[in-house]
Structures are given as structure tokens and as C-alpha cells.
Amino acid sequence: MKHTLRRDFTAWMIMLPGVILFTFFVWYPLVMGTRLSFYETKGITTVAFAGLSNFRAVFSNPDFWPAVVNTFKYCLWSLVIGFLAPVALAIGINEAAFGKNLFRVSVYIPNIVPGLATVFLWRFLFRSGESGALNMLLSALGLPMSSWLSNGAIAVPLIVVTMTWKSAGATMLIYLAGLQGINPELYEAAIIDGAGVWGRVRNITIPNILSLGRTLLILQIIAVFQILYEPLVMTNGGPNNASISLMQMVYRYAFDRFEYSKASALSVLVSVILITLTLVYNRTTRSKAA
Amino acid sequence: MRTIDQNHGLIRSYDLRRPGVKAGYTVMYALLTVVALVCLMPLVWVILSGFKDQKEFLRGVQAADKRYYVRFLPQSFSTEGYLETWRTMKYFRYYVNSFIVVLGATVAAVLCNGLLAYGISRLKPRGHKIVLALVMASLMLPATTSMAPLFMNIMKLGLHGSFLPLWLAFGANAFYLVLFKSFYDEMPGSLIEAARLDGAGDVSLFFRVVLPLSMPINIVIAIYAVNAAWSDFLLPYLVLNNTVRETVMVRLFTYRSSDRIKEIEVIRAIVFSIIPPILLFVIFQRQITQNVMAAGIKG
Image (tube, rainbow over all chains, first blue to last red; front, side, top):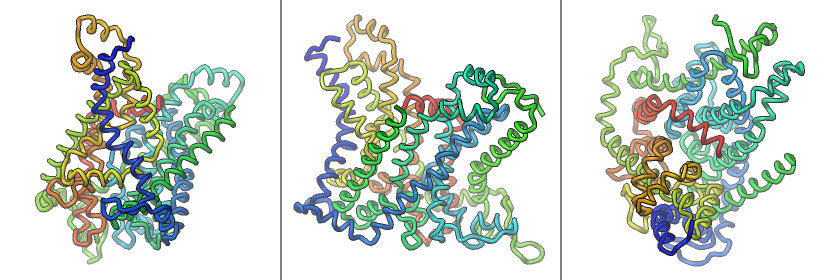
């Protein structure tokens, strides 16, 4: 297509609403956030250049190291609990000879429940004491009750269970699409070679969804690293900082204490960690694939 | 039991004649059933619990031996409790507010992302690659990072308590934009060219030809946006908190640390917040599940 000044102008006018909105809601806040992290703020006004003092304040906050450790714990537990579950579900549902659609819809339904409603709902299920739903279930089965989220040792994995409950269905659908894209002739060939069911899973199914899994793994880590409202609503970071996350600290700085510059400094740190993680991950998986 | 006939997947019907495979297959079915129950039961539980009153919800029902027993089913299915919460907590107003937010956000999501994607994909003016690169970069960067500066800017513009930022925020969504772009990339150009030869300008071309042709993707984005706008609470909370414009989700979020509200009211508030998305899912089940698959493969 030929570029004329008039055509280009019309095209940019068509794109203008989107460009303005992206600037206001996405690009400018990112730049401004980075700049703010080096400045002192009072309320919503910027006061003076502050060098690295915001970062020093963040590092010396007693919540900082627990939040760092917990954020990595969230990622680790989400890999243990949440990464393989959708793969296994997709393989199972794909092989189900009947009831396939029923299983697919049931597993997907939690995904359409608003995230906030999900965490409120699971906070009720995990209530400690005799009025908690799961405790009622345990005592009906004659098992001892648990203190659930009030137990610091299991608060993080329980929050990850809640997240997995909500999001596994959507990931399962993506794997299901990947499985349905596998050429049936590959299985044909494996059967002729005398491969059993397990051999077919290992040599055909898994290799064919491996690259999909690699992409979803890093996306999951990026998402879980920014975990915010799950601990905010379910435990408020407790007990004793056992479940506080980095983004929750950002939330506290910004919207409980109105220290926007410190919130920005911590956000910048989180971004740097995530970008580094992504780059390292891409490099290692690429060299393995090659 | 029905006969199993599948001869193109991983497990073939003749595999199932072997006892080991058959046992494994049965275990798989049992596990799938358990998972399906785990997915559905919390939702059934919360809806049933909403029918109970505060005492029945916390302690159960008193039996003949004077002890309290917890039951899964409520003692009665009277909707009085739900209606009372609806009235006393003024849920009608929150629903209206939520619908206004959802409507504006969906229009912005379809129109602004669609127009921008159309420009990048088909019109390609000089410099469009910079816009595309910036969009892709923002897809990689953590989104929550910009929450504090964005809120500051909204305050500076005096938009606290206004629906406007919540509508427009959906007009800048990198994920929607990528879906739109891949749709326009594959759209046959012949129809557009034909209309262009008739002398239509780019703007009228978009609204008269392109928009009607892209109804499939418009519907997908609209469904996503409706669900996302309904569920959104962080920006709505920051912008609308303590105004008359609070949405259903903002209200629910304020219950997180409130001791003055009864548990049963929170249970009913959860039910009120999940009914519209569930209705949406029931109506558009096929479109939603299929397009998640399509989007996932491309992404």
C-alpha cells in the first residue's frame, strides 16, 4: 500500500483513541513509576529528588525479607500444586470416552467466578474452629479439625490451592487444544512399534505439549509472583507475616500509607526480578531446545 | 456400561481389554469425578448456605437431643434471607453501578482496541511498528507495577468517583489488542478493497465494512470484557470507594476486614457477585470454552 501523507494521517486518527488510552493507562504509568521511585512524594505531589533512599527504606522494612521469601514460596508451591494438575486433567478429559463435556465444563466453571468472590468463598471454607465448612466436613468424617489459614506453616500452600482451584480450568483448556492438535498417525506408528499406553504418553503425548508447557510455566510464574489480593483478603499477610507477598507490600505502601514513591520503588524491584527471571528462563530453555 | 469406541486417541478400545489398562482407566474416571466435584461443590455450598440464617449457618440445626447438627442442605429454601440482604445492603444500586461499568468498559474494549489493531494490522501508517513494539513490551511487563502512578494521575485529573477511568481502562488492553490484530491479519482484503474502490474513506470503511465483518472477534472480546469488568475490583475500589457509585465487587472488597457485618450477609454477597458471570457462562458456554482454546494456542 502506498504511503501518502493524507492516508497516514487518517490511519493515525483511527488509531488515536487507542494510542491515547495505552499512553494514559499503561505506558506513562510505567515510566512515571520508575521515575517516582527515585523521588520523594507527599500525597500525590512529587517533592524532591531522593536518590536511592526509597529503595533503602524498602530494604530495611521488617516485612521485606518475609515478603521476598513468601513470594518465592508462592511460586514454588504453585509449581508443585498448580503446574501438573492442568496437564493431567487435560490428558484425562481428552481420553474420557463419555462425559467429556461435563468434565470440561465442571473443571472450567471456577474460572468464571470473580477472583475476589473466590477468595472470600475459600476463606469461609478454610475458617478455623467449629463453624468452618471444611472443619465441619472433617469432624463429620471423624477426623481432627485443622486451623487452616491461621496455621502459618500451611497458609501459603492453602492460598495456592485456592488459586489453582480457580485457574486450573483455563490452563486445562489450553492443553486440551494442544492435545487435540496431535496427529493421530503418531499414535498409530507408536502402536505398530509395540508401544504400550504409558510408552505412548511418554514418547508422543508429553513431547508434543512440551513447548506449550514451557510457555505456560513462565507465564504462571510471572502471574503468581504478582500475587496480591489472595493473601490480602484471606490472611492479610498473616499469621505473623507468614503469607505476606511483595505486591501486598506495594499495596500497603500505596493505599494504606499513601507513600507512593516507596510503592513505586518496590514495584520497580519486582519488575526487575521478573524481567531477569524471564530472560534467564528463555535463555536456558532455548539452549536446551537447540 | 456403554461400549467405549475411540480409535484415534491415545488409548484405543483394544487397549481396554487388558486388565491393567482397564484398571488405570477406571481410576482415571474416579479421579476426574472427584476433581469435578471439588470444582463444583464450593459453589453449590455457598449458594445453599445463603438460604440459611446466621445461626443455622454457624451452628447448624438443633435436633431432638438438644445438640446442634450441621447439614449441607438448608432447613428451608425460603428466599426471604436473600431478599432481606438484597434490600438492606442496597444491592440494587450496586448492580446498576456494576452494569454501567460493564457496559462502558465493553464498548471501550471492543472499539478502541479494535480500531488500534485495525490500524496496525491493515492501514500500517508510518510509525505503526513503534506502537506495536510498545504494546508487546507492556504485555511482558508486570501490570500491577503501574497501579500507584495510574491512581495518582486519576486523582490529579479529578476523576475520583467517576466511571470514566474504569470504562477507558478497558480500551487499553494488550491481550485484547493481540487477539484483534491476529483476526485482522487473517481477514481477506478483497472486500475492503472493493469498498475502497467505491470511494469509501478509511473511517467509514471501518464502521460500514470492517466492524460488521469482525463480529466473531467482537463477540469474543465483548464476552471477555464483560466478565473482566464485572470481576474487576482494585481500580474500581480505588476510584469509587466511599462514593454512591460503588460496584458489587467494590462492596464485597470492603467486607474483607469488617467485623460489623454478619457472616451470612457476606455469604449472600458472594452469591450476588457470582450469579451474573454464571448466567453469562451458561448462555455463552460454547463460545467461551472454544475461544479460550483458540486464544491459548495462538498466544
